[in-house]
Length: 97
Image (cartoon, rainbow, N blue to C red; front, top):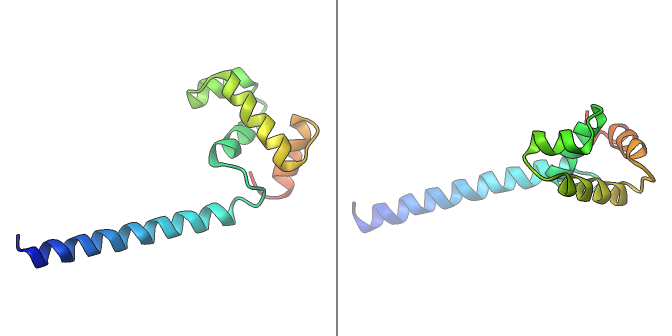
């Protein structure tokens, strides 16, 4: 491969990466009004389905302590007093379905 072909290929790769990253960040902002991380959203979604921390941990291959930390962060970010209120607010604000 010639040097110019390598440069052109690298330019295409870089442009593609920027495009994908841009789309990801836009989707993240659009779907994330409360500032929740993707993992926090997943945890609260499973909580909405009635799963306890151990079940969520098994489902996501993380520890129950990590689930507890995600729930605590979600409570703080949604200004919720408890898990039920966090789920209610997440559904009401279309953070989860």
